[in-house]
Length: 241
Length: 79
Figure 1 (cartoon, chains in turn green, red):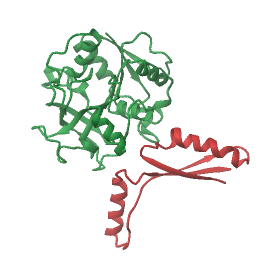
Figure 2 (figure 1 turned 120 degrees about the horizontal axis):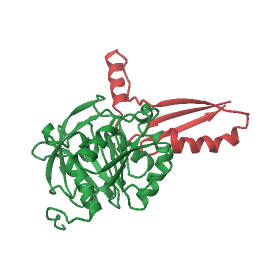
Figure 3 (figure 1 turned 180 degrees about the vertical axis):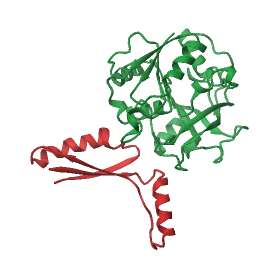
Figure 4 (figure 1 turned 90 degrees about the vertical axis):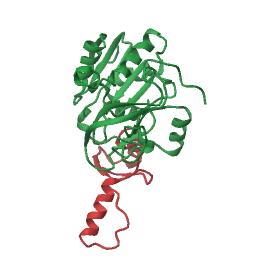
């Protein structure tokens, strides 16, 4: 499987993503400079974390107009797999590929720590290798990760099962204390209605190796790979409610 | 000629900066500060003097780039 990891001026998690996808997942992972107008023959796009364009104006606001993002929009609209991590999530929201926006953390503090995430649904390429309702541990590092969407958008996210990751306690409770940034509904990550585009504030690429004693994040990339290869999901799908 | 653009967070959006500034003002002894909203102010220098020709362009720029309609409101003058 070929992954394209985008690079904007100010991206700083691109190397971590290429390392994990190439050396841990064992797939082809190439950098793609933001001035490129074509994705080539890639099978999935990773929009990595960092501070594209110095976060000027608003996080992700300038990056959405980079030439490569037109190609990413076409790729996503044709059903291609796209994952945006941290600043990548902010960029995908700014481009309109995902609903809502990320605003300043309620505490006004940059939060850099391990968090627990509940994964409510297995019904996405990104969560298909994770048992529904289970809790994974992945780090965050952001100052503007407070997810906001209007009531209508939030209702749609809920009714379509588009909330893929929620900040919870170690026991899986979505409490206010477990919410590091004030996100509505404790949202840490979502997907689009077609379920091929995912955005998440936590960094799965920083928790993808057993030598780090943190490898829950790898299951997200394994899910993308399994989906691409057409493998059956490893655990039973969530029963319809 | 200049476009003067004011961008503010929508009422429904949490504005922790505004709240923090309000608390600071209260601590300084300013009474009757009901609410504070922290936004952005932009000045754009424009060619020519045709304000009506610029108005729809500035409006479009505000909508597409300068503000995010999901979380922000804007208004502007051209003078």
